[in-house]
Image 1 (cartoon, rainbow, N blue to C red):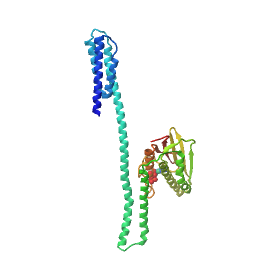
Image 2: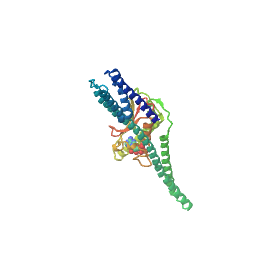
Image 3: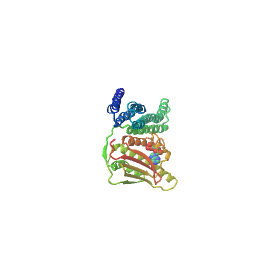
Length: 359
Ligand code: ADP
């Protein structure tokens, strides 16, 4: 395909060059006029530089030399320097075209490379995820197997210490729950089927709260919601977006509880607060979840979105919540998710989705 394309280009170029030679012969020798015919030369010159870049300069040089040759040898008596000026013009135009084509080609190459890199990045994050899951599940599995094995050995040797049984069984149950939590999270992460619908932005937020309102109330967290009026609709898989909000809100609840406990230990008063805002910013709908706990240090602002990154006790956190949120927002919904510091001294989790997004 490429080769036949190249042959076709050479053929077209040969026809143009033959035409250029014929025109030169016709006007210089047959008609003997100074009619400007060299404008036609720019077609093969520009084409050659676009097709073959700097190598294409050969065509310009050929035509330039040919023109000067015909000027001196066929019509030596005519006093015109036009042809002499045109010759370097050919080369200049060819050079500029070649350089521009090279630049354009480079930009395209870079774009292709970038796409490749993003793709490779995704693959490697999948690979990393698989390795990390193996590691994460291995740990609770070995606790379970050790507890089960030692109990079995005791039973076999008929020296069962009944008082130790509840602890062993609790260990087993706790670790089974941990594996269950990891798998439940993974299911959301791996879910491919997307059912996109056009929805009101606040509808998804309200749905998330219908599951969490009671929890926030019980935990003494005061929630305020500020929703801009007449927000445009967004096209999303509402279940997935709800999952994102639930993950962010659950983290906020946990971190607010932690801050509350700390204040209590220090005998200080602390009002746990959570602000949820939805606003329109240019062509985006921006959701903000602002807590007044500790905030996220700058060096962790992107790391917290990595799979299995957690600062919590292993029985409390899997480190998957935000990486799932990240995957859904950036990959499935084509949006952005990031963290900002807020005036209340806590973290603001931001989710921006393009209006009318049909990705
Ligand atoms: P997990 O909650 O299981 O640790 P996540 O991926 O949901 O996993 O969160 C990763 C980490 O991000 C948490 O361990 C915590 O350090 C940090 N984080 C999440 N939300 C907040 C928040 N609102 N304020 C401060 N840190 C947070």
